[in-house]
Image (cartoon, rainbow, N blue to C red; front, side, top):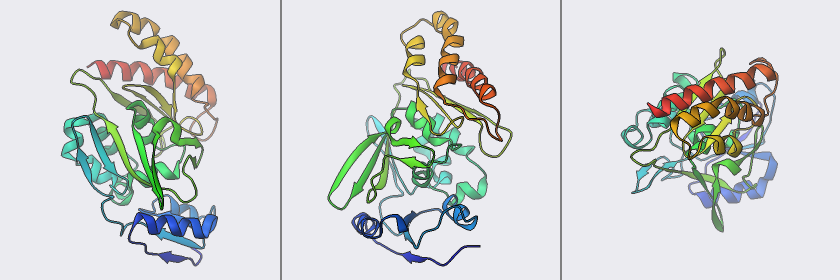
Amino acid sequence: MLRRFRLEEPQSVAEVSELLGRFGESAKVYAGGTELLLAMKEGLVQYERLVNVKNVTGLNEITVTDGSVTIGALCTHHQLETSAALTEKLPALKKLEQNVANVRVRQVGTIGGNLCFAEPHADPGTLLIALGAKLITEKSSSKREIAAEDFFVDAYETALEADEVLTKIQVPVPAANGRSAYLKFGYLERPSVGVAIAFNLAVGCAGPAPRRVAEAEALLEGKSKDEAERNLAQAGAVAGRAAQAISDLHGSQEYKEHIVGVLLKRAFQRALS
């Protein structure tokens, strides 16, 4: 059962930042609430205040420029899975969003909430790392860009400062001959392992946080198709170790490391096709 809390209703990013700075760890940003409210009901976390950001205008828009797609942090997963812009420019991200959790979660859960909650078995962060995305954050007096690969610090921990608000995700559009793919595996609702390949190679869901694997990238980048395919087994082993897999209900460490290699081979073939 939820304990009593105060709901704050700011109208701007500056107001959100001021509230977070004033109340510190006793306050938490509230968007879709699909992860946060569940954790509060289970008594895993407790906050005196929830700062509702759903009334802040301009954070639920998708815009396309020459070289990138900018996604507002309050865009729901459903908004992304039905976006014409993603269909044209980022089909791998659209396909991922179509398979996030379940219909109820996709209707109310937001991309920004998903990233900031940093649940280890979440999908989007892994592909955004592979796509070379940048996360735009703001607070009362400044704005900054954080590379997606630097945003996730640990399980449920991000690089956001206490009074910072994630406002946008900027995703480069692959070139006309660019290739990208995201594959996941799991027998529970949350994935056990996720592998993404695009500009970069990233693994997630197996360990505490999604990670870019530059060492595995080097085995594939700039190689002929035949040479890259010969290197896939080695790249998969490297990526499996880099995933920092943890034994849990989703599988043992060794099992997850093996699945990383399997998914990398499949993602490579899907990207080529």
